[in-house]
Length: 308
Image 1 (cartoon, one colour):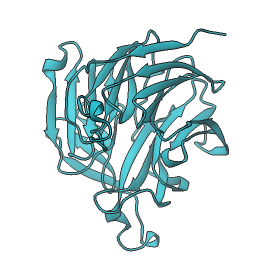
Image 2 (image 1 turned 45 degrees about the horizontal axis):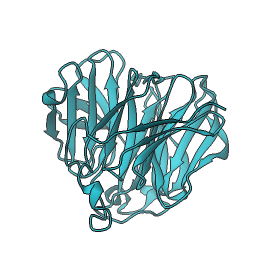
Image 3 (image 1 turned 30 degrees about the vertical axis):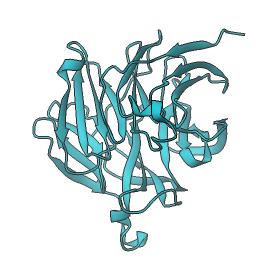
Image 4 (image 1 turned 45 degrees about the vertical axis):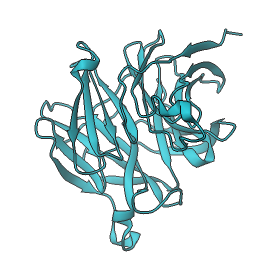
């Protein structure tokens, strides 16, 4: 049996006060990391060549929770915002919706009580992104969440419905499996994935997180191991393709861990502010900060949205 890997991160890469830090995204061509604060409606960008002092922060005026690059575009990125998919201008940070997701059949008010939460682009350039109740409007969890898929031809598909707090989404290195988290269930699910059509089938539980903490965002490495943020647990778990925990990153001063992302062999990890400061005073110290740990393996890499 392989030896369990363990890392402990006691200092942040950047000490911050994100309300809900999320969606770390590494752009290898620019060697930059961007991430969002959904609650405070901000976008943060750091130049990894220059380090923490290069951090730039921008007010967006709306909750943005997931971002992706667009193939062939230097001036724009695509994001999941309050009401749907939008294009963001890199220079002005202004948003323009290209596909709002809620329809008349969803009933009155759904567009206001929901927001986007997590997302990823698959091997064929489709943007998968999930929605949940916006806590500023209606406290989750309910079963109103939907996992959407926006195809390059701009057709929109509802891939999974009646989910509560849909989170991490990953595709296996061979593009045959999709992993998906619905946090309140504490489950990481797996589906058979058809790369050609984008269809998913045969849902089953891949890994279940025991205890009160829940899985949040996740990423995947070149070997097919999932790196799963455990929100409320102050750690990231490395889980093998055989669903065995083979590694653990402990973050003792930030309990609300939200999402990891690879930049080469470094893992960057976002976090949220401590929800119970009286009960967990140690987590107040760095809750909402950005962390970095060298893990010695490359991430699988990201794909660009292939807008036609």
